Amino acid sequence: MVKRPDRIVTGAHYGLKDWLVQRVSAVLMAVYIIMLMAIVFISAPQDYMAWKTIFNNQWMRIATFLFLVSLYWHAWIGVRNVLMDYVHATAIRLTLQILVILSLLFYLVWSAEILWS
Amino acid sequence: MEAKLQNKRPKYLNLLRIRQPLPAVISILHRLTGVLLFFPGIPLLLCTLQLMLGSQDGYEKLQTFLLNPVVKVGLLLLLWFLFHHLCAGIRYLALDLHYGITLSQARASSKLVLAMGIILTILFGLVIW
Image (cartoon, rainbow over the protein chains, first blue to last red):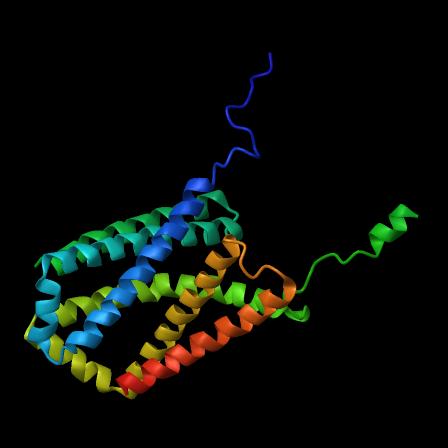
């Protein structure tokens, strides 16, 4: 009895989701950076209150939060690929990957706390 | 005959002794800057945001901190990581869409990416200095 593998090694686009997320998140971040530079250029904030006013706008908070979520997801895929390429010992790689996920989740909560406090 | 040919093959490739073409240099810099933007880039970005938006006191602390020339050089370095990563990333998106895939175009766009990263960093440096 030969058990057929559930997954075929090639040709099934298993990496497609990550590939696509990496590009979509990159485009979203680029759009946000252009938007932020335009806002800073137009309103030219000079002091604390001016910056605070920009980020007190609810849409600005949401856009910034989406930018940061894109950043963390993008960072996860990138760092995961780097770890898969260079760290061949499974135990060490898994440990590092868990640490990366934990740090990114920590950053996510921290981001919300900064934006909505 | 075949055994002899096999023996003459290099046992390993010394990356430092191979003269890498510019697109390869751009590529490894893209990876390297990506890792550096993850750490220390992301935590530094969040610390900055927290100081900037947290309180008047924190904002002033951040301003004094940024007057330090060493901090300014560090900031410029991080900005170069960001701009290089961004420009190289745009180049890869173009390649994904089959723009600029001939050898001469790929070489030219590599030069452009390297130059744009440095030019944008210098421009930002002039603004913040």
